[in-house]
Image 1 (cartoon, one colour):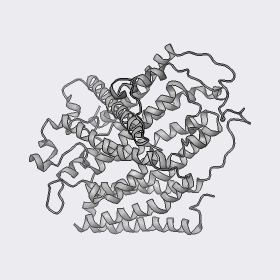
Image 2 (cartoon, rainbow over the protein chains, first blue to last red; image 1 turned 120 degrees about the vertical axis):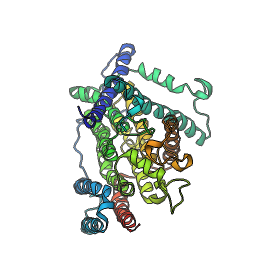
Image 3 (cartoon, chains in turn orange, blue; image 1 turned 60 degrees about the vertical axis):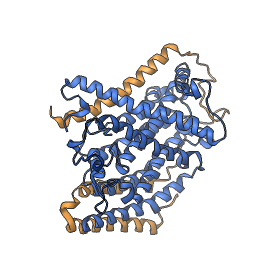
Image 4 (cartoon, rainbow over the protein chains, first blue to last red; image 1 turned 45 degrees about the horizontal axis):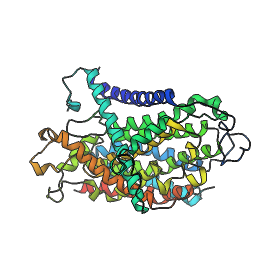
Length: 121
Length: 354
């Protein structure tokens, strides 16, 4: 296996280690903790009063326009990163290119702003 | 730099065990120190009280007492959450795992590093969002209105802070010309300002705007107080953590402060020179000429810088009121993102000009 893939394998070990350590502590906890469920104890907590309706209540996600814009800008950031590492080589050409790119994006943001979608509906 | 964590001649499995043990220390030690020093002691002193004093000298053993206490607490899964009990129980582990994945890229010394990714900071930004997945799962699986709102707020918060954070980092990447965290450290410590290399070139000076934006985003990422809407004890009763009890609650808690530590490490690597001291002090020129003792001094230097940054994070946390979710959203999109885009272009122009 190449050095490159091996270093990514380390990521897997760290992820497994997190689950292992937390699992170990939870296992110890399972041996010594009490377990006496009662109806009141298992009730959903709503500030001490009896819960009203279903737990999964409907709620409006008010930031969905932001979420849409977020996807666009996040993809854009993916494009900027490789450019940023190579800027020294691209010099003025790269600068102008990215100026146009960021300019268009800023224009999009200003457009969304003027259209009034950058607010909590 | 194949000599990862001074263990290049050991077999791979032994190296991996050493790395994982090192990672455990790198996650849990900052978390414990931050909780004791800042959450227990600093907060108490700021409120004119002593804080824990009984367990050990000045209450320094309080953490062990707390862990012992939480281990004995009952693990309650509410009746409404029983159908989803499995993912309800798994959510805190996902949050903790995201912290462990984050620490993989942090370099602690010239050879003391877990991995040497070419795309280090890119990986860190990507992995840091996994914790929000865990929070969203926790909020949904709890089958509680407060928790669901808290989870949704956490997701909304991600939409607000993630972009300013990414865009602020781009300024540093432009200056360093690399995404590799180790090389970013070297670039700062070998750099010079107008030909003077007395303190290297820490990017906190040249990228001050990016530094401020990054720290604001970190504050929101960690959901510390001006931006703690997902937790919001007084309105959502701790949001996504409402239904958690016993050790699973503690895992959320450890995850929160371990992430604070790791993010402060990443911020000090990006902006304060990381594990390094200015190489000119000791006549080093490249990463290979750095003396071996930096492998031991480096982690301590990084730790000191991390504590300084966490101090500011906690100071702001203890002394500010909570914003509303829409205020953060508006602040991020109408102030932080335009400023960071301008910062990127300005950095690029100056980089090409000089």
